[in-house]
Amino acid sequence: MKKYESIIGLGVAGNFAGHLEQANEASDFKNIEVKEENQPKAIFPFYVPNSKTKEFLSQYPLSHDQIKMPEGDFNVQIEPEIALYCDIEYSDNKVSKIIPKSFAAYNDCSIRRPNAKKISEKKNWGESSKGISQTLIPIDSFSSGGIIENYSITSFHLSDGELHQYGENSSAKSYSYFNEKLLDWVVDRMNNQEDIGPAENISAFIQEASMPNECLLSIGATRYTDYGEANFLKSGDSSIVVVYDHTKYSNNEIIEFIRKSELDKEGISSLVQRVV
Image 1 (cartoon, rainbow, N blue to C red):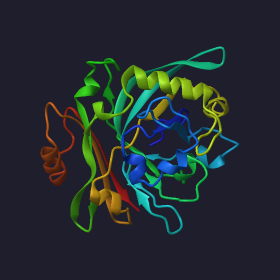
Image 2: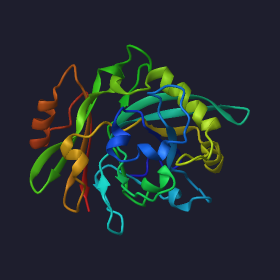
Image 3: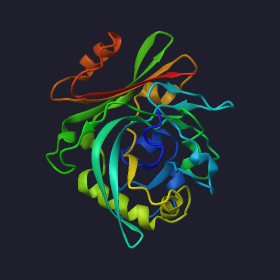
Image 4: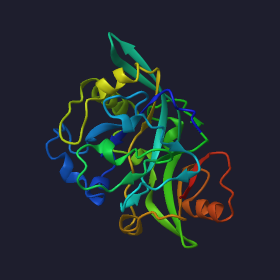
């Protein structure tokens, strides 16, 4: 699945209270200045077509059905998120606007690599190191009252025949920054983020990618359950991320749909990846 091969892939770090602490990454951002306590810390690239400065980022990482484990003895965790499929507009060689068109369940699967200098070094280790659902849900308006506010994110780990809740069942409205506030902040970071600490100059990557007209933007991972915080992926497991309309379904109903392989329903974007 190479639907997004020609566009840039970016993620938001620290947009869900408590996640960075659980991932033992909060201290990485100690030199990143924020204006508000709940402000996300940075955006990072996970895929940059034709990147020459960081060739590993030019590897297409997205899959809808599998996760390939990295070489070496690394802990790898599911990062359950919503991804936005967006148009990008430019003015005077800078990003002037991003316009979300649809959203989907996303797995920002990450290596827990303590010595990584940049966020991106934990994110793309080659083919099938990330995941996005094939089901994209159209966005009517990414502002207060929009359809996405009716959705929640839930995630599970199927290991040795047992299904475990991996991330907390969380409403999309629980994101620290959301709707226009998130978009305005992301546009600012795309243009002005500096190469400090784990953060990188995103504007340079956008230029490397030939100023693409679209992007995938993953907007932050939810908090883990106690189980999710302590357990990692291994070959033979399955990672499951579901974004669902909570006005139609409950988390318990989603669990039953998973057990019966019945996730193909209206109001559900699901991502089931076998770990290989």
